[in-house]
Length: 328
Image 1: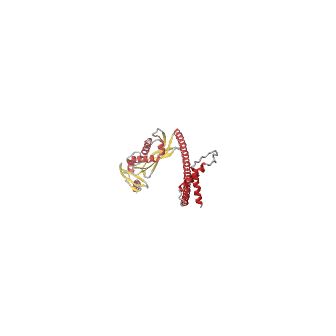
Image 2 (image 1 turned 90 degrees about the vertical axis):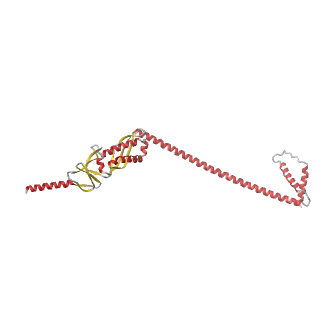
Image 3 (image 1 turned 90 degrees about the horizontal axis):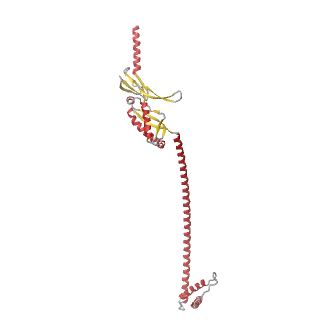
C-alpha cells in the first residue's frame, strides 16, 4: 500500500507538471512563438493554448525597458521575455548631436511609435529588435537632418517626421514591424547659435515694421492724391459747366440782339418803302454813329481829338430823316 501511494503521488505530481507546462494562457494583444525541438512550430494567440511539455518551448526575445536610477536619471535596459506585445509601443530616445547642412551642431531627440505585426519575423529576423530600432532611428535621423539647413529643420518638422516614418517603415518591414509615427521633440542648437538667431529675428521684426510703416505712408499719400485729383476734377467740371452756361447765355443774348436788329431793319424797310430810300444807308449810318460814340468817349483820355470826315454830315442827315419817318 505504501508503494502504491508513492506511485500515485508521483503520478499526480507528474500530471500536474505536464498540465502546467502544457497549458499556455496568452493575454489579449500578446503572442508567443513556440519552438519544437529548436525549430519554429507555431504562434500562440490570445486565449488558452496547449503545447507538448518538454518538447515545445516558447522562444524568448529581447525587450526594452526604462527605469530611473538613484540619481533620478533614466537608464535603458533590455530583458528577455517569452511574450511579445502586439500593441503600439513608444520609444523615447536620448538626445544626440546632429550636424546640419550648414555645419551647425544641434541636439535632437525623437519619439517613434511602432507596432509588431509579425511576431515570427520580430524573433527570427533580428537579434535584438528594440536596440536595432533605436540605432536605425538615430542613424536615419542624422542622415535626414544632415541634408537640411538649421532653418529648414526648425520650420519643416512635419516634412521631416513624414520622411523619417517612410524610411523607417520600409527598413523595419522585414523585421515584422510597422512604424506608425515619428515625432521630433526638441531641436536644441548651441547657445551662440540661439543668440545669433535672436538677433536675426529682432532685425527681421524691425525690417517688417519699417516695411509696414512705409506701406502705410504710401497708402496715405495715394489716398490723399486720389482725393486731390477728385477735387480738381470736380472743380474743373464745375468751371466747364459754368463756361458752358455763360456761353449759352451769350449766345442767347446775341440771338435776341440779332432778332431785335432784324425787327428794326424790317420796320425801317417798311418805313422807307414809300420814299424809295435805301435802308442800307440807314444801317451804315447807325453803325457809324455807334463807332463815333466809342471814339468820342473821353472818360479815359480827355485829350483825345477826333476828326470827322465831311461825308459824315450827310450820313447824319440821312439818319435824322429816317428817324423822322419812323416817328410818323
